[in-house]
Length: 241
Ligand SMILES: Nc1ncnc2c1ncn2[C@@H]1O[C@H](COP(=O)(O)OP(=O)(O)OP(=O)(O)O)[C@@H](O)[C@H]1O
Ligand SMILES: [Mg+2]
Image (tube, rainbow, N blue to C red; front, side, top):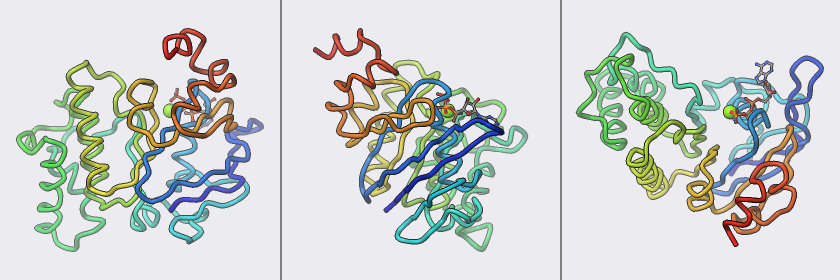
């Protein structure tokens, strides 16, 4: 479904992504982990057209999307959440989500219906009249997901939607991710919470200093000495036995 080949990104004189090559198949849940500053969010920005790859190509459903803008890529069926949530603070939740829905629907009425369905999906329909600025962290994360969902994604990129949640909110978020999977949406998920990412992912990709140092099923990745050294640490490895 998604194919990256030799993708790279530099900021000034610094390589932030180097020669990234991997595929994501339809129906998969792929985790993306790595230390702070490894390049995970930058990779999402390159896939979704916010930044341009300096080399190689990105294909989605066989079509080269490397030079397309974010709106076009979204229309093709790739959407993402933002690590730093950005609700429009002075407008209600429903309208925040309608902005996503308007990419798919021609009339406001249809966009509203689609937005309400997305809010219902994430469990926020009862909060549709709240203003963006009055939301809790957990609701801001859910709103990001609803807005993405309203664009009708085939591939959904989630950037740390669990960060800052308390244990019960975390449990709800895992259930929401399960609902996305059951709805047939392919997921590419950045997360620092290891027991969650290792449980939900079919495969995990590890970035360190802009390089893909490992990719495989969670059990393999968790035992890989390079991953333990760069990210997980000896304690995690010992705890896993
Ligand atoms: N717009 C930018 N201009 C210059 N440097 C940037 C820009 N965006 C990111 N960087 C740098 O690129 C590197 C990778 O950043 P990125 O945000 O992709 O990391 P990350 O893996 O998502 O980290 P975290 O886990 O903290 O979210 C960092 O060194 C960061 O400072
Ligand atoms: Mg990030």
